[in-house]
Length: 267
Picture 1 (cartoon, one colour):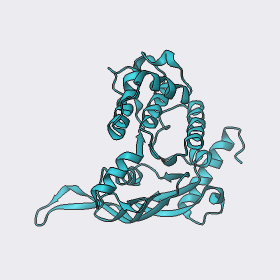
Picture 2: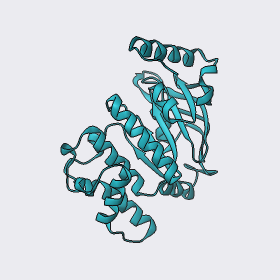
Picture 3: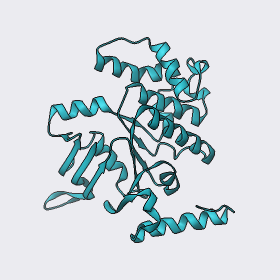
Picture 4: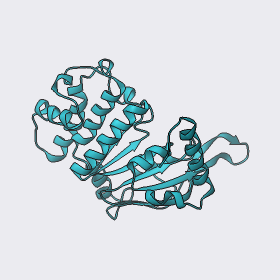
């Protein structure tokens, strides 16, 4: 459904060359991936590995220096049709729910942002309050939250509202950029269970960007390991224990050590 082919991305360096002007710092090197419809692709890497840059390319915010970004075979950056298709089909859930939700907006208004996009696309008005109630129920909340404000919600509740806003546009693909990393462990599991439920109920496709391998094994079908802007491994999650990649092996060992020290057994 979504595809990158041999993508390279670089940015201007802060250090200026006295002779040749600004130099460039490359952050992605020949990255290719393919996200199948109805699946969840996990993009895993440490800070600075380039995983959020991949997210920006996939959602149309950053044109690569070279290579292609395709949605259902249509170039995202090469045609107006591809750009419009991306706008119609993709939503985003961000890491920092406190800044992605306007603190002066009620829950009804936050979800209403997504509903406005749907109205614009479908050229049809909806009963926003009634639809917001339905979406809240879908993400495990109820109508009593409609008139609350972000500061009146827990982190998990506010992220559920942000997920409801993303779903409100009726997307086919949702990009989740570190969407659970700011939550405590118990709430992370609850939100991942919600995401799995929505994926199956609505037939969604996910791109799940994270630095946490445990969440990858919990939620994703395939995993792409990214190190220094390069893909080091790309395989189904069910085969992750058979990886031959040194970086992936090191991450697996670190999780086993951590879980064992906590008195838990990793399966």
